[in-house]
Image 1 (cartoon, helix red, strand yellow):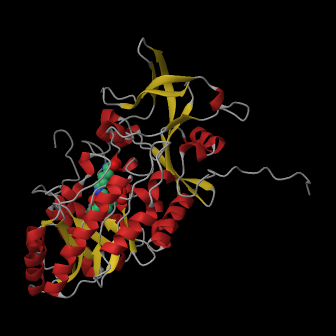
Image 2 (cartoon, rainbow, N blue to C red; image 1 turned 180 degrees about the vertical axis):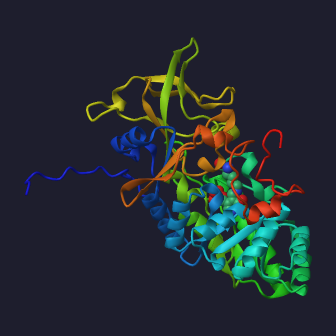
Image 3 (cartoon, protein in one colour; image 1 turned 90 degrees about the vertical axis):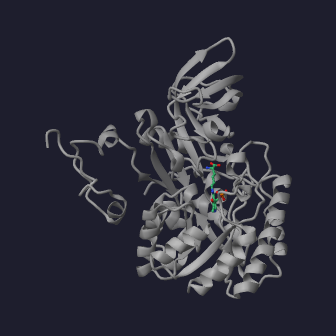
Length: 460
Ligand code: LLP
């Protein structure tokens, strides 16, 4: 037996403050070896951090149902992780319901939020309900309730209200104040009464303020939002006397900038509890970002370094097709080069203004503009922080760039969770390629062609 001490495997991160994982908390050597082993761009999701985030939120909201918004990150490993922790799943589409079921969620753990639902989505979910009668459908329009009735659905129904109060990190995500979402507040009681009279099992009222509530001003808006939702839910409850829960949606923000403070969870929990204290209904919250954002990083490799009179332009191999948030919302994501080896230290590098861009032929393909960063060199691997939420989910194959692979870290061990797309994947759906077979979704979405999954051969 060797008397040498075993080589310690560095853990993927050491969080200085358990409320937040900053980019600097991730272990350079572990990330670097993942990039070397699996290539770049690469999404890394630390399931241990997802669990820690879930437990912290659950401790702040001990009586609440935590309904994870799958749209933030629908990777099966992540869904399975939060299901194991006790979460239910909020699904925004038939595809997310499909994923939740595949991850092992029973119907009582699925809330489907129908936002302008395509016909096939409703038909798919109503189909699923025949096997899983305890699932809940949230309707945001009287019209949606009518369409559900036409499909023979009279199961658990929740009504989404428009509270007229929004909050969030960008105007594009302040849904609570946007008429697109939810039934107008002055009509909700009549929609509720009519749903009950038609035999629906009206169980809940739902609203969502927006996404990325972080600072005091936004927390104040959240407080006004909860008070408004409570008043509306009280009216609905008085009219139908059946409310089982009030769902105040998600929106719990995370710090993206190094000097942003973490969300004051106690303040949000208090405001929510106080606002809803007169209602005898279960509280449901729908966090997406909070559970997964800081559990993920995106690794990308430097291709090109170009000095210009204005700044140094650094081209990396991830772009707006990989992480769309900077291009779409001007969102800030921390960026840090990883040390190349044990002997080198990134902090010793000179700080220079650098513009980090992707490989997409568009001026919007920029992660940061003239940001002061340690001088980047060709072949450096950079880590981009908070990529666990709305990262891969919003990725595309624009410019025919195959989407990257995803690795998960589970109990300290890394494994590939989703393979990198190949060039063959880009043309897989086109003429002359083997078809993918049909499934229920295909049947529900196809037009009059007998089989829209198959494209005839030339001359056929
Ligand atoms: N519930 C509903 C009904 C929602 O629409 C959303 C997000 C959530 C829950 C979860 O919100 P969260 O806790 O993650 O803030 N792509 C944008 C965010 C869009 C959020 C849309 N709805 C971004 O990257 O910032």
